[in-house]
Length: 135
Image 1 (cartoon, rainbow, N blue to C red):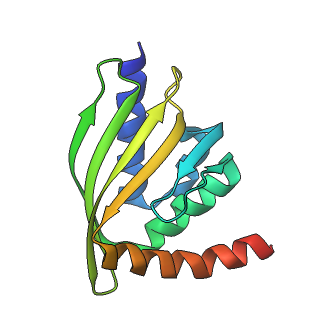
Image 2 (image 1 turned 180 degrees about the vertical axis):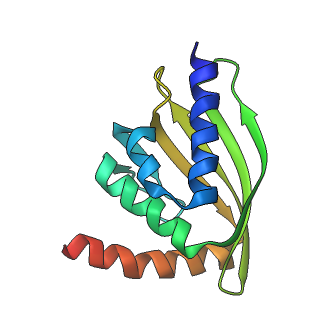
């Protein structure tokens, strides 16, 4: 049953990004979700901070596009390959997403290259994250 739930959640994920309706994150993210950033070693636990991160990254990325999807045999994990721009910097990356049996995201890890694209994203997110932490 989990592969069906995961595929339904991935369809919702793509719809969310196409429509920019980030309220969909509320149903997609488990309360105990963890985000693993390509910039920071320590993960970010909890739905509020993960919602903040994902919402802001979507705003920062330009020309964002997914290219390929890979599912694990158990259907609980997906890897999504993407490309985007941050200003003039081009980047390629993958989202490694793990789901629970209900189809909610419990772990979200991002890998990015090249370094120049990662640094551009880190600078923009750093500004926004500083304001978030002050609030």
